[in-house]
Structures are given as C-alpha cells and as structure tokens.
Length: 338
Image (cartoon, helix red, strand yellow):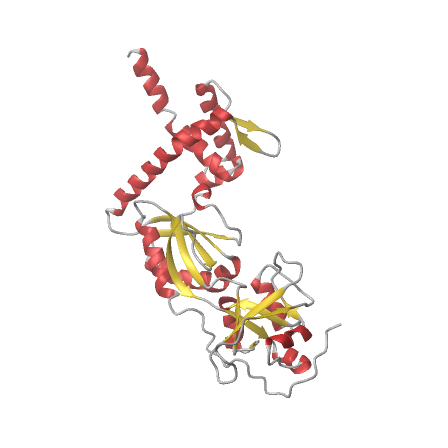
C-alpha cells in the first residue's frame, strides 16, 4: 500500500474519534459527553488523547474544573459539524423507510408544564410508540437546541423564534387564583386596583416594582373598550416557578398569578378559585405553547410522531372546568398578613 493509501486508512480509523470531539464541544465537559454517548469518562478521555496524537497538536485544554477547545480543536469541530449532521440526517431518513417511528427523541420543556401536563400524559404516547424513547430535560432555561443536541423544545411564548420551525400546540392564558380561606379573611377584590391592598404572590421580573397588567373581558359588568390597567403589587413571596406560587396560594398566603396549565388541577379540585375573572392578566406569561425544532430538510419520523401527538393531546388547552370567581362568604375588610 502506498503512503497516500496508508494515510487515508489512518484518517478513516479516526472517524469515531472526530465524532466524539464534536460531542465534547457540544456538551462542554468530559462527563456530560460520556453520558451523551453512553460510554465511560475514561474511554472518552482516551479517544480524545488518541486523536490529539494523530493530529500532532493539542485539541483540548484541560484544567481540574473545566475544559475548552484550542484554536485547532475549534477549527476541526466547526469543519466537522455539518458533515456529521448530514450523516445523522441521512441515516435517520434510511431508518424511517421502515415505516415505524423509532429512536431517541431529546426534548426540553418548562419545569411546571412538564411536571403537571406533559409527564402525566407521556405513558399514552410511549405505549402507542414502543420503538420511541423520550429523553426529557425539565428546565426553564432557554437552551440552544442545536448546540445542546435537543430534537425538540416546548416553549411557552408570545411568538416562536424566526430561526426555528414551530408548531402551535394550544392557546394559554394567565389567571389570578387564591384559596377560599384567604378570600374569606381578606376579601374578594372586585377591581384590579383593589389588589394593592392584598398579598400578591408574583413571579420576579426585571423591574424594581412588581406590577400586573390587565385588560377587561367582554362582560356586562366591564366595558370592552376599558383601558389597560396596571397595578403595582407586593406580597410575602416571589418565586420563579409557577408550581411554588400555586402551592403558596393553596396554603392561603395570597393571590397568585399563574399560567392556566399550572392552575388547572387546583381550580378543578376547588383548592383555589379564580379571582377577577372579568379581567384578563396580560404580559406575564406566553400566549401559546409551541413545539419548536431547528430547521432541517429531514424530520425523523419519531420526532414527527411526537409532535403530532403533542398537537392532538394538547389541542383543547387547559380550561379548568370549575366554577370561578365564586366565594360563598361576605367580603371582609382587607388586612395584611403579618
């Protein structure tokens, strides 16, 4: 065999090493990359060391706490990313010719939505598609889907990003809720302005003074053309998780502003009732749930089947099915919790 043939054979023996380097770059650590590939950390380190010896230059700089690619490593990863993506898409297309959805679908979704609405429904999908596996990441952080290897994300948003393909799953709305015990003690507010005299459990935002915004719904009590109302709110608890706010409201700590998918079960069970149902809170949370994925010419059948299932199972939204805004006791004079 001539020198050119030997060199080609040497490069071909390193295809897997190159792939592992791209995964290492995506995951940001040897531990995470090894978990992603289903191998040991020692095997991961050994393959990268072999690749560096073959390349003749360092590709990864390691410390006791972190790693980062060298300039040579970054250049190599950038050059290899698209070819490996093309290989993955091509192979997925061939597998899909069998006609049965199969394979791993990596999904990221907001914590509260996933715990309360998605996970309880997943058994139906997995029983219907036994060849599909779901890897679910529960996080309110907006992940980079391509960089972190996710096939799909569920996003609660006013609009999906222009750089991705998006499917609308359902409309959502924000609701004010409180326990009956709290409303008996403090009174049932009849206008948004009355919330200034209540303990309001809110999601912390960037502004110094928390504020809730409302628009009037079409009812006989409130004119449709009423202006938007903004109310500064205070309360004993702020939390960046709607489940925490919901549980605090159930415990009687105050009035909470929640997305409907977090409030649904508590409203249905009567643990809370809706407050100010004639007014619609606006701007606090997204208006719709979307399934989004990076643009690709080929969508694996497993991903497509999961999206289709999401659209079907969530099409009805999250109506509470409970009477709202009804507190069968006289209104008390407002007083603050001490």
